Image (tube, rainbow, N blue to C red; front, side, top):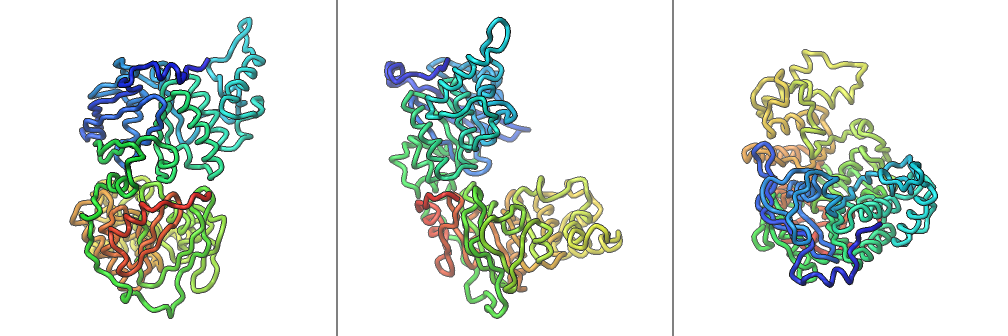
Amino acid sequence: MSNIVSPLEAHSQPATAALLEARGIGKSFLGIAALDGVDFTLQRGEIHALLGENGAGKSTLIKILTGVYSLERGTIRLDGVDVKPADVAAAQALGIGTVYQEVNLLENLTVAENLFLGRQPRRFGLIDKREMRKRSAALLSRYGLDIDVDALLSSYSVAIRQIVAIARAVDLSGKVLVLDEPTASLDAHEVEMLFTVLRRLRQDGLGIIIITHFLNQVYDIADRVTVLRNGRLVGSKPIADLPRLDLISMMLGRELQHITGDRQVSADSVASDAQPPIRFAGYGKRGSVAPFDLDIRPGEVVGIAGLLGSGRSETAFLLFGIDRADSGTASVDNKTIALTSPETAIANGFGFCPEERKTDGIIGDFSVADNIALALQARQGWAKPISSRERQALAESFIKSLDIRPADANRPIKLLSGGNQQKAILARWLATEPRLLILDEPTRGIDIGAHAEILKMIERLCADGMSLVVISSELEELTAIAHRVIVLSDRRHIAELAGDQVTADNIMQAIAAPARTEAA
C-alpha cells in the first residue's frame, strides 16, 4: 500500500511546517570537512534541485539524509519530528526513498518481482504471484504505465526501469523521493516521460530532491534550487526568482564582474593552415555528446568549458577513442581515421591525461619510470618490451626537464605529490611525441607552484607546434592559455569563442544561455 501523502493531507498540515528540514549538517572524512553547517529544507509537493560542482557535498548530504552515512553534526526533522536514520532501511521506514542513476534493480527478475522484492504477498505461506501481478499492474497504472509486469525488467528501456524503480521507492517510502542523476541515460522523449511522472508525484504531495547537471531540466522541472560549494551552503532560492547567470555564479563561486583572466594568447600565434588540421565532423555519441564539428590546428590550444556534467569529459573520451562515436568522422592530414579504442588514438598520435589522476592516470604501486614508459610501450606493442635501461633513461630525462620531485625514477609514483604525479603523466604522453594532447583538468588538486609550471609547459608545447585540447573548470585558466574556447551545456557544444571573445564573462554568459532540448 502506498504511503503517498494526498493533496488534502498535505494541505491540512501547518503552512509553516516543512516536510524535511536539515539544520547545521556536518560530516568529515579523515579530518577533512565534506559538509560544514549545511541547511536544507524540502516542502511537501515540491521538486527541489540540489546543485553544485564536483566536491560540493551533494552526495554526502544525500547519503546522510538516506541513512548511508551517519549524522555527525546537526539535526534532521521529518514531519516536524527529529529523526536520525541509522541505515537505508531505517530511512525507507521513515518515508525517505532513493533512486540512483544506475537503477538498483534486478534485471533478471520480472517487473512485478522487482516491485515487491523482499515483501511479496503470500497465501498459505507461498508467494501469491497472482496478487503480486494484480498489485504491480495497479501500482504502475498510477504512473501511466501499461506494461506486462511478468516480463523481465531487462526487456524494457532505461526510462521504464527508472519509473519502475521510482514506483518501488515511493511505495516503500512515500514521503521523500531522492533522485540522483535520473536523466543521465535518457533521451529527450524519455526525459519528458519521467518528468510527467514527477509532476504527478508532486501533485500528490510528495517531496522530491533531484540531483542533476542539466540546467535546462532544472528550469523545466524544479520549484526550488539549493546550491552547495566546497561543502557549504551557497544559497537556496525559488527557480522563478533565479536567472541562469545568477545560478551559474552561485555554482562557480564567481560574480560575473569579478572574473577577468589575463589574456596571454592571440589567434595570430596559431600556425597557418598549410598543414591540414585534425578534424572532427558531425562527431558524437547518442546519450553522451550530441554531434559536433571541431578543427584543431597545429600550435593551437582549444579550451573546453562548461559545468560538471555538461559533456566535457565525454567529449574527451570520444576524441581519444575511450567511447566510440556513432556519428560523424575523424580525420588527420585529410585522411579519415577510425578511433575505435585508445590504442588506435595513440597510433594516430593522440595523447590523453584524464581528470581522475589517481584512479585513471597513474598505477600507484609502479615506479615513476614505469608510469612514464606506459604509453610508449603501448604504442610499441607489448611484444617489444622497452628495456630497463631505456626506461630509466627516459624517466631521468623527463624528471630533469619537467622538474619532477623527488628526482627518483624508481620511487613508487603514489608517494609523489599531486603536482608531481601530474607532471609524470604529462611526461608519459610527451614521450610518444603526440600531435594532439588532450588534458582534462590538468591543474586540479595541485599546489600553486605546480599549477604555474604546468600552464607554462602548455605554452611551450603550443609554441613547438603541438595541438592541445584543454578541459578546465577554471575560467581564468582557459582565458590565459586558449586560442579558442568551446562551451558545452547539457551535453551539447553550444558556443565557440575565439580571439578577443575569449573572456571569463563571455564564457559564463554562454554557459548560462538556454540550450536546445533535442536528444543528444
